[in-house]
Length: 185
Image (cartoon, rainbow, N blue to C red; front, side, top):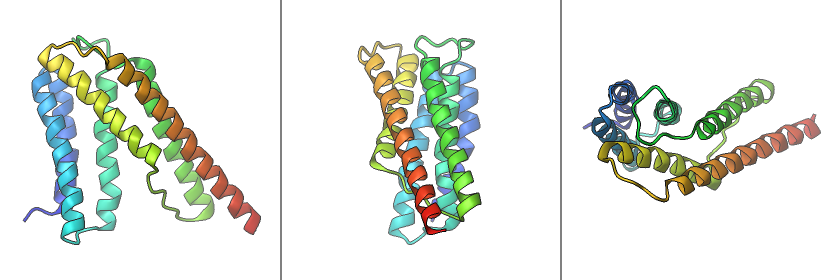
């Protein structure tokens, strides 16, 4: 039987394959790899819960695998150098990556100054991830199948709004934790 961690590592291995497929304009293949990565993400979570395979390694690697695929997707699908019929706007890619950098720096600072803290995803964080995945999926579908998706601009703005809202919400959570910790000192 395949373990949850093996599926997570497989998802990480899909990232360079996905990158190569996009760079060489094999958008149908990139779409297939992206969808397969999504299936492995669902399966590794199911297997971890169903068969008691939740591990610290899996808890560490799973979000990294997700971020590697999402960040790679946003960067590639916003490049002018690629032959894309529809691109992710650069302002959206900068916002998505900027939020992730802000979160990573904040978590590192909090963990270094106050000890290890876990930050479970909020409903806004989950909605943001879902909208980011939808954005990538729709841009891949548009380029692979050469179809027009008239509501794509709305998806871009929704993803932008959710990314900003969730980033601010996580920032406020971090500030409150820091202030609470300072009161106890």
